[in-house]
Length: 343
Ligand SMILES: *Cc1c(COP(=O)(O)O)cnc(C)c1O
Image (tube, rainbow, N blue to C red):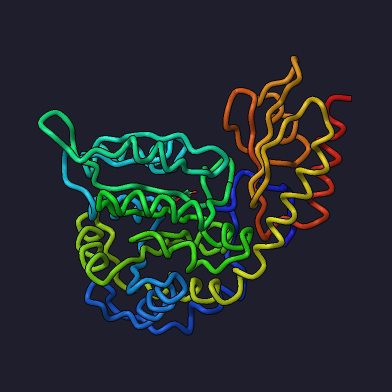
């Protein structure tokens, strides 16, 4: 494959590998709404096992998984606790209010740490004036522009608070495998303290489509109903499941390379006084420009001319996401381009 651009906008731009595509013609298919696609069932059982959940459901996107979870756990007019910079709050077309019709209670999450006191203060048991808290939503890695890993200890602390008030916890684990890799723990351990979880097949794992939603058998039964309500029931979805099974077997181990490359990139540009970068924990590098004559638009245009694509995340801020299509050579080129920027 001839690479013309170094595309760091997102890990969602990854194309499926040829090995992944080769799984599709040999796939056994069936009508998945009737529960008759053997490849989908195989994937769902495998994913449930990896996450330590009773059952799982293949859905078309992470957004759909999140919205189904909200529908499952809440009733109209209730409240859900979510992180201020979370995907659920910022990037899902106001699905929280438009679909589940619940109100949001925002909490600040600092470098991937959910403060249990803040969470506790945000919980409402409901009275004549206040809606009841239906759900606490966590995200790991936290914040699509930061990629911080939320630790097991932190999740346990939140669980203890939630248990006091008998409130379920949902984990948006879009990049849970990047988090597990960075923390050197099993993905399952990051699910020990939550009731349900989703992860994206389309990011670091490189699949063309799909997310996995997992939880108890009862949760998944209801999720199937809500998926159908959203028009997300699928027929011969084995063509999505086959590459996903391949990815779970072959694309997880290598994520440590992405995390490592991101750290290396960060380290090599951190001495530049015109640049400030986040603390890099996984595969996401956010870069703020401190130079008076530069802003994000100018930087993006400049980098595009150098064949590097990045994403704007603020007037003076861009992000770069590392994935399997980015080579060590690419990283070196990006480093030298950035370090030669203001000279
Ligand atoms: C990408 C992402 C999603 C949504 O996934 P889509 O498949 O793009 O809908 C949800 N949450 C987080 C944290 C994400 O990064």
